[in-house]
Image (cartoon, rainbow, N blue to C red; front, side, top):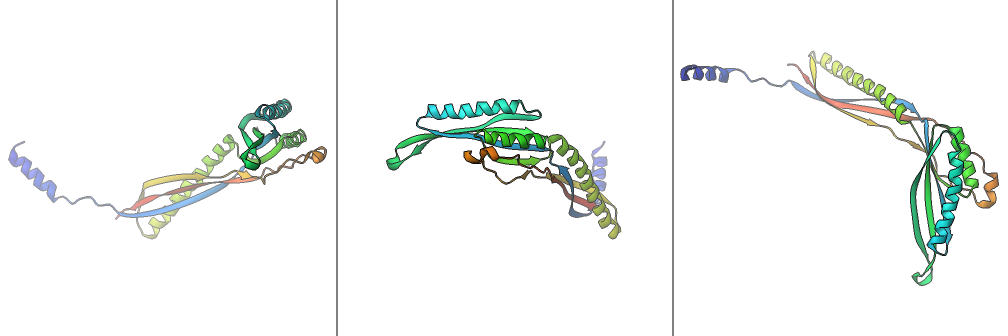
Length: 225
């Protein structure tokens, strides 16, 4: 191509109108679905005081060992170790008068009846109940999240279509952002009964209930001019 031809092409290109974006509109839509709280997590712990670290560890390890024997015989319940802390007890003059130790066990089950009876038995065995949480299991949550995401995207598209129709224009999606939320439902913290009441400890009723799983779709659409 000669310089003259190149200059002519450049001149014609310079006279072409630049493509301009249509009207941009930001919007969002949300959808929610209930998810069954089919997974129960509970924290139990052994705690003891003694005059020296070795003795306090012996007492706590004994109580945990007895509890683990019972837990492992309970079908449908899994267990793993949690936090373990040992710290001094100070008296007058900041002198160490003893030692205290606490060690946690974390239980998990989808069988509410089994874990309820187990928790009652563990409290009779000197363990204390820290807290109980109920939530959708990973499989349940994944299934519900997929459905609620589809709902939210459809709601976004429907809202975009209403806007475009009202303004008498077509539209295209420029940007999308998807956020999901949903929380476990914690039960009130329960404390172990005192030893003189342990024999009367009954299974704690656990109602699974539901958690709301939500998806928010936000983004930007461009209206054609």
